[in-house]
Image 1: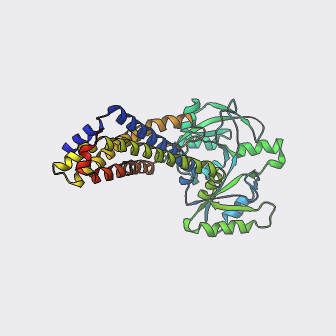
Image 2: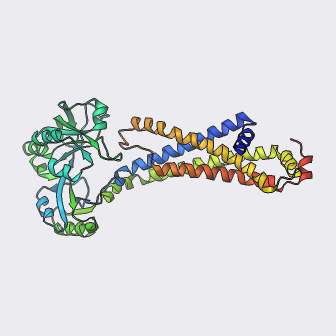
Image 3: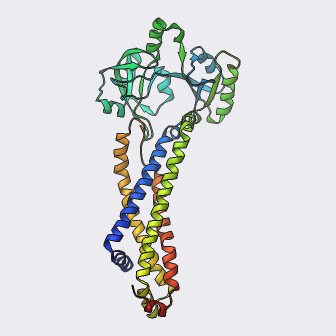
Length: 385
């Protein structure tokens, strides 16, 4: 307790300088935590992927479709427990700025493969029975104020026209990492309309979702699926759900790398700032350290005071930065909800914040400590200022 009191008094001799240094560390740790959370949000979909699911798409590109007839052939492959499918719809609500992920799905099989989408039994039943029914995520419903029973018109981008849906359920995520900003409706509703307006686009789906009996057999099942449709008009590329999600992230890998680099540069800059502050402090107190030595204090006592003060300042700024990360991340997540449906501070980010607090404090105190320990009593006594 006495040591902490001594360190705090030493640290706040020059209050303005110390407060500005603490503020700098706070801002740096806040920026680092926020940038790392952005990176985590980028990988949220991949991290939340299930090891029991595979995704099969057209081998040429995701923009090319697959025949609905493939479903039964995939179901018969050894190791496959269940098969569902989905089509990216790409509709917008009222204006183009109100964009969100929307999918045409086979309701029964899709919801069975995604237990993380928690839906009340009566709402699920209503969704299955209503061809024009839809299910929306909790965050999406809160964003637009939708309630069960509301009629939602979407303007089609890939499939032109105005499509009307009735909200039959609002799902919530079983985990914090579950995306609650998606929109699901029945594929049959889309397909029936296409049969009338664009017959060539009917009976086609975007991806197949394959449930595995044994996750360890993912590679074998993937090869078996792709082999079944080799040399066909629509060959498949089957991969784990995580690999499928990472394929989207790879398109923006340069941005992710840039964000990571900036987050570490921020830490290096603040490390230099704190080191400069501690160097100024040590230079001003050379005479004091010489007096301590003359009184019989050993080198480790002097080192403890300098290092302790550096760690004290770094820790104060660090803890303030960590505390501010949560409300700032929450606000940022709400503003950027369209781009980052899952935006939460990971535990690993907090661990890195704490580690960098200690690293900044230790590195910033090395040179001032070395200088204070090596000063001779006579030289210190002669020093003025």
